[in-house]
Image 1 (cartoon, one colour):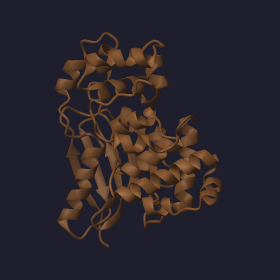
Image 2 (cartoon, one colour):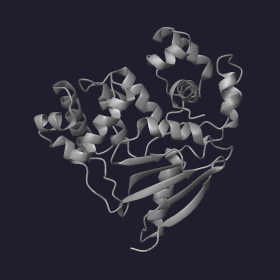
Image 3 (cartoon, helix red, strand yellow):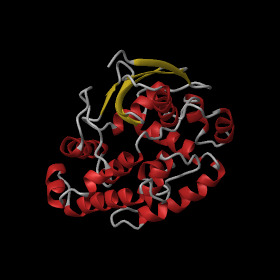
Image 4 (cartoon, rainbow, N blue to C red):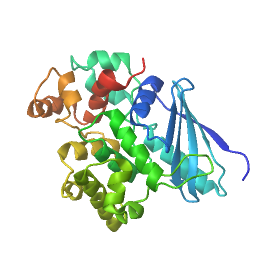
Length: 282
């Protein structure tokens, strides 16, 4: 097919490679993604106008180097590049965010330590929604294991050796017991995954907050988390246990009240607290 395409993408205001790689490693889907912390790279399959393409991103303090499998049209290459830019939050001006969060006594040292922290989004909203459901009420490691089994059972191979994440129609048509056994889920969690896939496939696009909450097995934490990953920079997850511990063991109601001072950049405050607690490699 020819040589891979390679481009450099700047991140105005800088980037924090350790924080990004820490987050990606924590949520890595075996079989569909590879995070190499030592090489400072992450590879995954992106869906583009010409079909799936494996993309490899090398992280630096000023931006990223992106390499992806050949495409025929410039528009297809541009679509992949734009997907990476959105995913990694590369176009955000961080100055207003730093100015808004630094006056807070709890956040000030975090912003000073990681001034180039960005909110990682997603390249596949359906994948993020399903993996979030699989990770509910279990450890990050268990969530990765479930996701890897799902990809192995229902994903499709690509020339790079990575597999695509299952499409909504594939999971919507899956036999419930077959899915449960293949992934190792409870019957209730398997039903939630299939119901989510059916709703998503029927909608033909990302579901609204109300549509997600109407699915049995999906609650406010899941929807709040997805809002952050889907690009709402003021989204917040007041019920998140890691967040509440980072704020001194406060209640969800108290966390919600505390967050009002961080508007309209609450997602960045949340990621600063999460990174300190769980994601940063250094």
